[in-house]
Image (tube, rainbow, N blue to C red):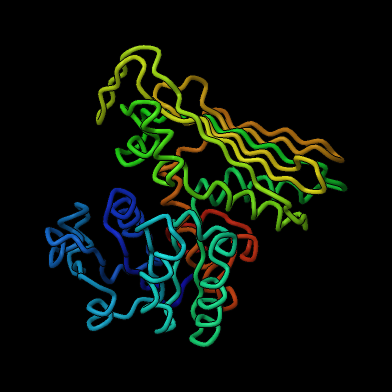
Length: 339
């Protein structure tokens, strides 16, 4: 049993942040001490008002970490406020300087050194000085297309290549995700946004880099492509009206080349009304492994679970910018015992 509750605060109160708070409130081993958001309509309100969870009535929303720390000192910040590693590092710097660890759903934090090596080194040194830790976690990236295949190779005598395929019915997902995959946009407009880095699934290359890192492979290059999926007819979701011929999702691929060979292939098809959603991992080697999760892992709900479940393992890790592969094996944390 936990002798002391772990104190957490929520940074970012969008759809994922709110669900994170709801799940945190259901854990007897956690104590929610506050939230942080820049939305003036949320600042000063109680977390009970925002979530409907009466037990959070004593915690309020603050405009900054500095304002939060003036009244409460959490052990861990639950960060759900962006996809950029550089931006996320800057957002939580105050916490890391104070020795407060951070569990984040920021996609690029799955392997931050890929795009921001200098910032990663800087914040790693900061964490080692202060005793804090920061890790990126989630479902994709954070599990399905990286940690899960890495775990499967634990029974491998030899790994020749890794292929991961994820098909997601985006009609069941939150509004920001349906928007991010281009729902209702003209195909050429979506292609232009992807080329500008303003559309598509974030963290794809970072998942591939984590896989290569875990396998001890030196990547020669990463090739990433993304094409819009075209609606075959009108599609209506809770958030969008999509006409025939418009974008209803994406087909994104990343290929990692090692020794002149395509060693890692990640294939993501995420679109409205996708049939037969699933997650498939194929490891070629000895033994050959083929795993399919029928229905796939429900991203929104499972991402929040990954964020909460990582908390005790993060606190047990050595200070620094950590990778998921450097922490104990992910597992469910019993809401009563905290184990």
